[in-house]
Length: 294
Image (cartoon, rainbow, N blue to C red; front, side, top):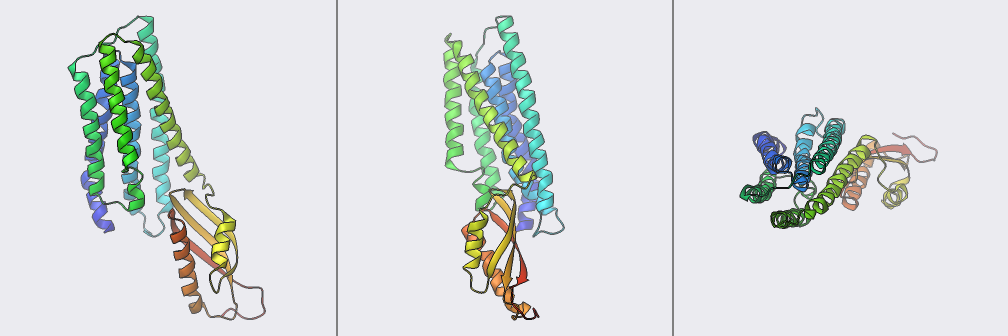
């Protein structure tokens, strides 16, 4: 199954990138050359959203290159660093270019111009977005990964933003030029929010932010028969992709082979209780009793 996904990713990756550029670049160019700043801003927002979706696909592919498929955490850091740099780059470049466009427009009193191609570009962008979702589904990601890009809220948001974009084009075409300023601020707020969201999530992953409550984890572990004195709980990753390790004490008189079902129960209980937990490492220590740990 994993190899099948990897093959599908190699097959569809360039389609993903192609669709991203066709979702965003036409809007950026049309907005720039026809002096419609909000459409240009919308294009940068679509570009960032598109790359955020494709980085999910890239995350699976990069981690599949790890020599240890059960512990690909180190490889996934490469991808998060790339996601961080792309978001930062798009954010800075778009801020500079949007500012330059606004200064040029209001310094030279440029008037926006709308023709039929503008409507076609906006409608095609939402079609390309839905195609991107369709091809991502063909890769057959796990439910947890799929929720990051394919849910009703994302699709509703894209349709809603498309309707707002079309209303703006109609209004500007009929002389309501103030809509360009209003919608520029509107889409710029979305762009800033998306940029900061990606940077924040990537930063938390790269800095190994602790994302679970140690007391809750220990209460759960200590409730399992044979386990006691849970301590030194550590978690790294993101809220949707966590790697946990912890220490637990067991009766020093039991044999190592007898600890296996207890450890497996700890792992399964944590994964069942926290859907974001991807891997659990349990370090066994003898309880504070006299005896030999055989």
